[in-house]
Length: 142
Ligand code: CO
Image (cartoon, rainbow, N blue to C red; front, side):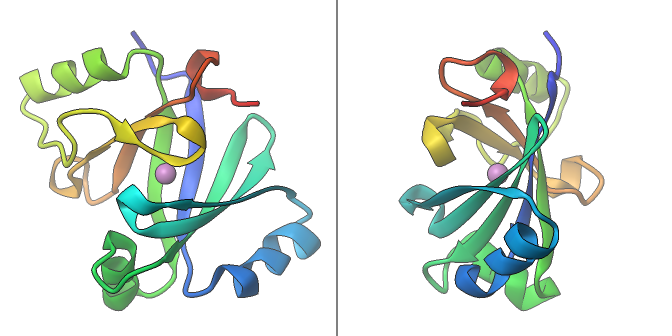
């Protein structure tokens, strides 16, 4: 049981199309594509950064958690996602230790991943995600 690495950083943006060129053309990150994740009421754009990724998040609805974050804090870093192989065990371990989970069961994330968020009140104000990529060890991804 252990964290394999940082799977991705989630960054909240008002508008994907306006945000993408900075990451793709100025920072030179490899653009992997866009996807809608209805479960989280977001559209995302993914960039490869070595073995990690940057995930830009644009809300698709005013009641999206990302819309609320934008309202409160404006655009910027939204969450940190760690890659794990044993998501269910990890959730059970954290709950046993008294950590408050937003997701006490894995749910669907981008790219067929399974994810679970910890509540920021239990993680020092940093919205923290545990992420398991499909068919790959520790979220190294395709
Ligand atoms: Co994420």
